[in-house]
Amino acid sequence: MRALSLSHFSSSPSILRSKLKFPHFHCASSVNPSTFLYISSTRGRGHSRFHPSLLSISTKTMSTQCSISREIDSSESAKASPSFQCLDGIRTLAESGQFKAWFLDQYGVLHDGKKPYPGAIATLEKLAATGAKMVIISNSSRRAVVTYDKLRALGFDPSLFLGAITSGELTHQYLLRRDDPWFAVLGRRCIHMTWNDRGGISLEGLGLEVVSRVDDADFILAHGTEAIGSPSGGSQPMDLEGLEQILELCAKRSKPIPMVVANPDYVTVEARDLRVMPGTLGAKYEKLGGDVRWMGKPDKVIYESTMGLTGINPKECITVGDSLHHDIKGANRAGIQSAFITGGIHADELGLGSFGETATLDAVHSLCTKFDANPNFVLPSFTW
Image (cartoon, rainbow, N blue to C red; front, side):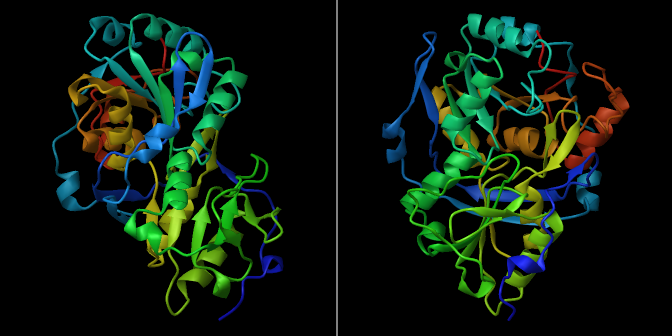
């Protein structure tokens, strides 16, 4: 078996792609709610803190089985056409009082990673004024506290939110607690796929050892798609092809090692481009036969954690997101209503060229059918 040698792979930065074919992702899970988040303790006064008491909720019963297939089977394509209501903004929904809790995605809804979308900050303030409980629910590789820092830097008021739940925070807590059977036997030595330009992910406090040889690793930890972690604590830039070659070596071991994906997204918006996310690596490794644990949307655990935080009946909750596979299908599985923002990662597929442009009804129907996702509402953007 070849040892992992960083010199064997390309060191160019992670690629940006304007169009990708998304794997179709099937996931069945049996879970109890488990909440790991950054929670606003004095909403309206601009102060927030991490709430340690929420970490006492056990994760032992989480069991998830996932599979990736590249094509939609005939039974899925034969399903009834999605039915949804088209809106220009959220005002009607907000003022109706139907939804007491709003679960909001970040990238593609509130901002593009570089700047807020037009009207997003004002819309949040108006929504908060209705008394709605708002929670950030994000497939971000980073811990929840970083989410608030990011929002604050972009001009949002974090005190408007009840809390934030990220896939990165879930990953950190599962690796720390190890009271879930799958994580309990994971081992401590990992190959760490991380970020470079976007900033690395710290593993401090987890008791992990980053290794540079495939033969030495107990598992793969995917936080990013731009770099490979080194035993010294730093990282070396590596492109997607290089990271995929490492996955191929891991899959060829006599006993392939498992993989933890801290961000299940395939891509995310960055300005008007799409940047490849760790979910793309997870899909690749599953296709190679690897055992992958997906942390975050569309798995029910992140939605149940959010509903547990708000204490609101699922019938009075709504999620707002731009990914049909992650946000909308996740909401479908969790039994809550959803609003699909067309101007995010699916903008190119829907033929949209500018912010706020309205997608054709046929285009939205076709894309929803392709992903087997059923939003209740469709909006061009998160505006009032």
